[in-house]
Length: 75
Image (cartoon, rainbow, N blue to C red; front, side):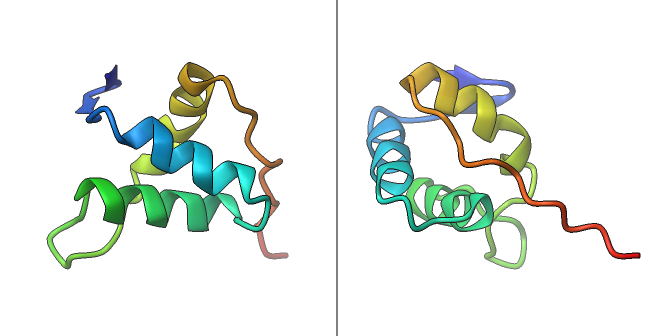
């Protein structure tokens, strides 16, 4: 499945579905789990932050709703 510039294998939707259905994951945790499971890592071996941009589209492809994004801005 192609989402944006990233190709996801057939297991990515299952990983995403499992993470979202558990209900205990923040968006950051879901992105981290998805990136680690699919090998989408940056040069430092960490989850690629650009995954947060494709997460809503990927969730829509799977037919699931994401938890609301938290406001992380600081005063």
